[in-house]
Image (cartoon, rainbow, N blue to C red; front, side, top):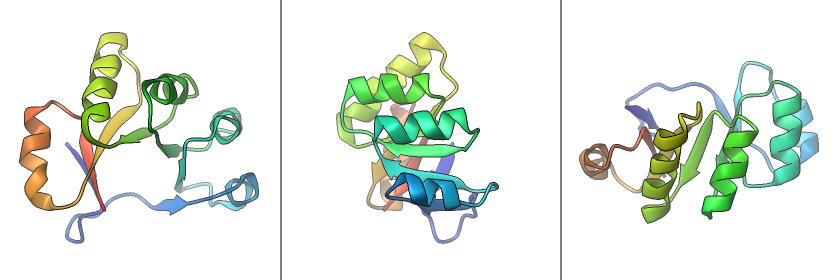
Length: 119
């Protein structure tokens, strides 16, 4: 299971960005993170940039996976739908469910979600 955002568990460098300019300036060894934006997904994919994207609909899940998002970050029931899509279509993107506390990790594993992002 992937766990991002826990203070005691190391994870890769993730940098939140807001624009294509931020994306262009990002370090090549980091993963950038942004709210779903089709143009940012396309740019990151075209330029071989690892990216995590926060999505709010099944359509955004599908498009993000098409552009090879490293992580697709979702809340609530959307994470379940996204994981089913990922499993059914064998996509490379990992589905991360947004949670608020480490106590939610176990419940997330019961749902078969790839990982969590603790905020």
